[in-house]
Length: 262
Image (tube, rainbow, N blue to C red; front, side, top):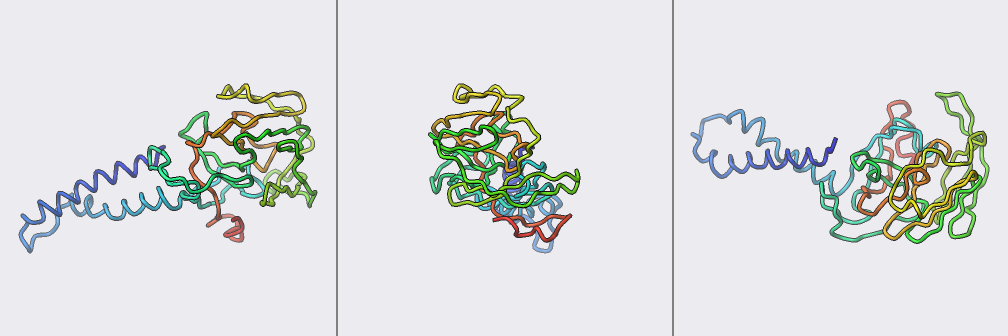
């Protein structure tokens, strides 16, 4: 569902009713006459819908985490806020950038439209920038020939599956974050999608090596062995970027998670 398009169409419809009432029909109504239903339930909603549309399009947008691909950073059921202007001002609906502000950085948690089906939003961590050479071999990440630092910490318990997974602290640029690596899962990448720039990646039974093309980003989930990401379906083009995730504002199952991610 394209919620931005629905809001835009509602703005147009209610805005037309509000304009017609303000400049035409209101002047014709007797002073003691009540508002007709089309004004009460149509035009009167225009300011509210417009405010929601502007806030959601240019400032922040709420999302709910639907899967475990970003565990342990984000859990299923987390409600997060996404900054819509960090990476530039984009026209709503068209998603066309009209003002450059910042570029994604390694370590950012980013929401984007899935290249395979742009109607679906995904959330992953930025690992590779344009021009980077990314290698994920034997479950170790290397960027431009330099192995990314990993420090073993306590194991992570999945309370739903009652299963422990090895947890590490990884350093991506200035961002330190936790990742999960399942030593029992195979290192090779299965179910590889046909995608643009497929020739930029080389696969073998130990993992994958990719060269990130200009204007694209290589994304990975923090739950490394339970995340379908750029290793499977390729790179995220700049025009698919939605914004940077920065805050957990609610979780029905665990109120302590509010504000635990930034």
